[in-house]
Length: 181
Image (cartoon, rainbow, N blue to C red):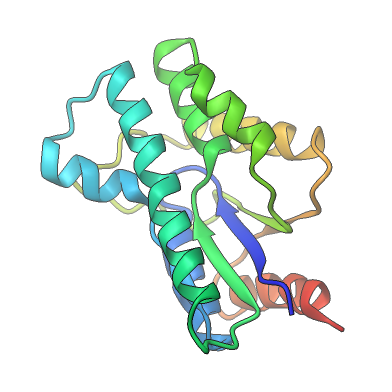
């Protein structure tokens, strides 16, 4: 069976990491965390345009490492759940700096995924030291940017909304359809 890659994306504080972890546990699989969190904790929350390129490369290296590990073990997992991809990096670059690294754009074209789960902003924003946009207006604007990107690309996608267990069940239903033989 070919490994399916499922990306969970959306604005900050929409439950992406929680959902990835829940899905990986449910399917007996693995998930790839968002590298930006690790990078910003280690290097500080003041970042530059070039830092976003470093973060993008770190995200892809982490994804590739998890994928390689899954493909070289006796792991029978059918899916890898990925918290963040290059669409997130594109939005972040353009929203903050008004431009995007060519590398990120090239990787969007090169990388192939099987399903996107777009997390809605219907969860309450939870403050932490890395989050930047607590206001609903900005979160909703970012959500609409992600939705527009997904509408205009060819990979299937599903909006995930509600609170658990509805949020998880919505995502699980989409993944079940993808994994159905």
